[in-house]
Length: 279
Image (cartoon, rainbow, N blue to C red):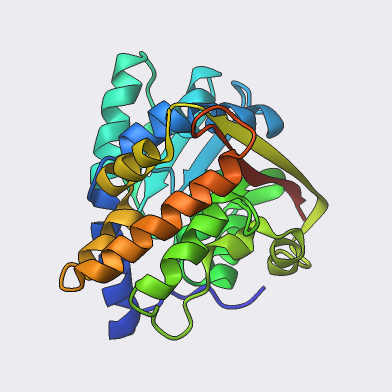
């Protein structure tokens, strides 16, 4: 396993601060609870979480997977880089009558002991950490030997992966060394990250149906209001309204492409479900 010493360069610290700000803006709670609440439950079931387990949800956001895990009776810690998301998760957990620990933590330098958890999981979360190998090493490190690692990641070919590809030409370039999030949606990439660290590595492509919107314009408005990465790109285009309008057109076309044959703007979002056991 390669060294997992925390990254301390000014560039990387600035990038982490930028990520915290990006995910704190908008309303990710709405995304998690209104569009993809089922994904956390899928991951908890696939990992076989039960009341005997110590569980860590990394890049947990508002607890989409951590809260269902806690509802099984498991001892759960939800960690995320963005305190505002954890604060929202605490309120959701309280409303559902479950108790779990919440910790501000960097997925690339987790503040937990080696082998501390029976299940380590992340639901469309760790894929956004910029340094993939560091992140994978940390997931493996904090999982006990024989414990389970479970991930849900958007695929590059699916709707969210294509949405990021559509926004990329309009966004500021990422700093050197930062890797694209949708790579985590490719089996071969994830398998290479965990090489030598896990066994029983399994993947499955699945979809979640998004039928909240009646037309492409509803989707665009919703994401420009609620989704941090989309908000950040449009903010960067504030001085060039013509480019913002061009991005509008490109995103609307993407929704139209994926909803073709469905009613309104109903779209199936593809994700990669990953499970493995720690060596």
